[in-house]
Amino acid sequence: MLQRLKLLFECFFCWPFRGRVKPEGNLKDADVIIAPSFGQGENNPGFSNVDIAGYIFIALMELKNLPLILQWEVASIYSQFLKGLEEKPKLHTVRTHRHWWKYLDTYEVLSQTKQIIEQEEWHHPVLVAHPWHLWRAKMILKKMGINLIIPSDLGIISFDSESTQWWTRNWFFWMIREVPTRLIYFKCGWI
Image 1 (cartoon, rainbow, N blue to C red):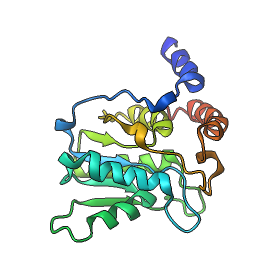
Image 2: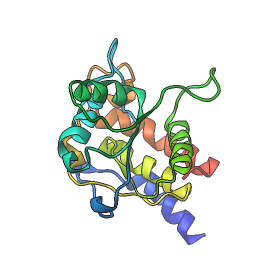
Image 3: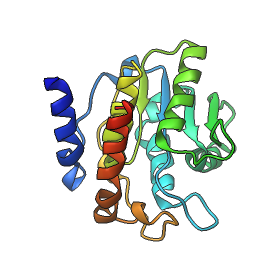
């Protein structure tokens, strides 16, 4: 009961002001990289997703041969970075909800990610997400029983002021939508 109250409290007060995200785990143990997207451009994946893909490609260079599970917006950018490379890592892309009529939300992306992780028998995923999206993604995966590695310096991933998803344009809009979303996820038992 106390743990659930703490989690409910975090739904309102756990935010990465100044982009600070506490790293967790050891990157040397990593066996897969996972990344949900954040926002979307008009006819492109969007700047935030370019930042996420770039972070994976550049900041996690020592993990360049690890397999990846990426939401399609991030995967489309990351695939561009891989052009011309002789050795390409295994890439799984989450593109659509399993029920074609439903919106591909974070829970569905991470549910599909969990399936892939179990099928491939990976045990130490690195989670790369927008710092303002990270708490919810981390809590979902932990609830699913997945132990995560969180890298440092995720604060360099930006908001996209031109995103077609208004709630991903800045931190203020994000908080307006994220608090109710966290409460729904809490009520559903997804976090």
